[in-house]
Image (tube, rainbow, N blue to C red; front, side, top):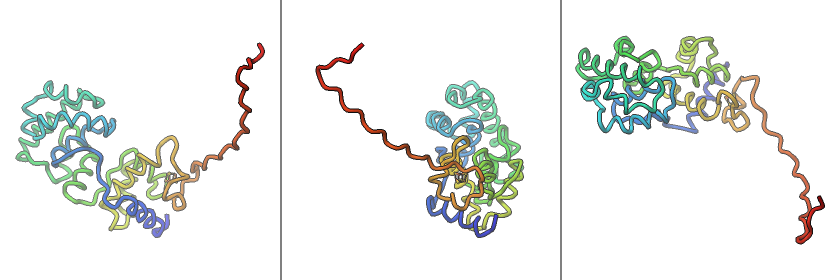
Length: 232
Ligand code: SF4
């Protein structure tokens, strides 16, 4: 993709949404870490449903550790794989207490060493909490980067490398959210909304969905006269 096209795509995404952010509810770095960790293989909506009840009760590493695995489970039942995630959540809280004085660590290695935290979650925390230029690649971003031609790649890591290397510097910090939201609401997996997509003319996807052809309106049948019954 030509650098000017790439820049034009981000300019349009930025104009449509100048301050993009996550849809996961949070009020602190620890809450964000918990929400992102819980969001693996499940929707933001179900994570928010869980954290709305969990955070008022426990939103610090000490409080989560004190709840324990069985204590955490009832709050996160709306989240997929909640048994495993409950174990990870308590392990993560305990490790933050033991190794990082109760604060979310700012280094990738320390974040990825936390139970349930992988590269994607670490990238989101480094980007959103610590302002580092990281572009976490999830399923939506992987699809949008490949379809548009922004950063074609066969693996999330290859796409991430392409995005980090080629996204103009002024757009790198927010690129993750623009591409994620575009993938979630416009460039969806099954039927991308190409006809109304704001980057349609810049996107290099060869199989864009066509605009629906409007059916001709059928002539209306004359209304049946009252009192007359149809013959059997
Ligand atoms: S034109 Fe279609 S394929 Fe390209 S980014 Fe937009 S929705 Fe996705």
